[in-house]
Amino acid sequence: KIKEFFTYRKINLWSIIKEKFNFMFLSYYLAIVFYILNIQEAIKKYKPKIVVSMEGLTALSQTVISVAKKNLIPTLITQHGFLGNLELQYETGDYFAVWGKKIKNIYSQESRLNPKNIYITGYPLFDKYKDFINPSLNDLIKIKKRLNVNLDKKIITVLNTDIVSVGRPFYNS
Image (cartoon, rainbow, N blue to C red; front, side, top):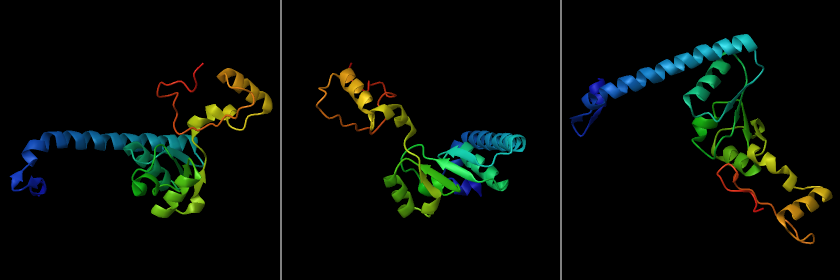
């Protein structure tokens, strides 16, 4: 039967992919079994009240979520990237942490997620810029001096990505 499944335009692909398929299947299967055993041991040892997993796409995160649910432990999935496979990525968890209102609205409208289970937590990489957002008057003066900006000018901070982590400075000094 498997040979018939791996046939394309009457060409049998099974003989071509059999060795790689067996290797990938066995290594993937064994990795998931390893995850299950270790996650079960960790749950038994630490008795968590909730299990947090980043995204929900990888075999590890899906296994963590599945084992937690089997043990009746609620799961919180945190947003890692932007709009992957909604069903696979987020519909497996109990609660969801997303970066902002717009993303919450997208997930609420385009998936079966209950909006009451979606929490806006913000983008964690922007936390390091908190002094630039709504600073105190003293901090604002320090920032303007550091950036060589006239004290009577306004500073508008727009952060759409973590520019420091991709190798570019946040400001020119």
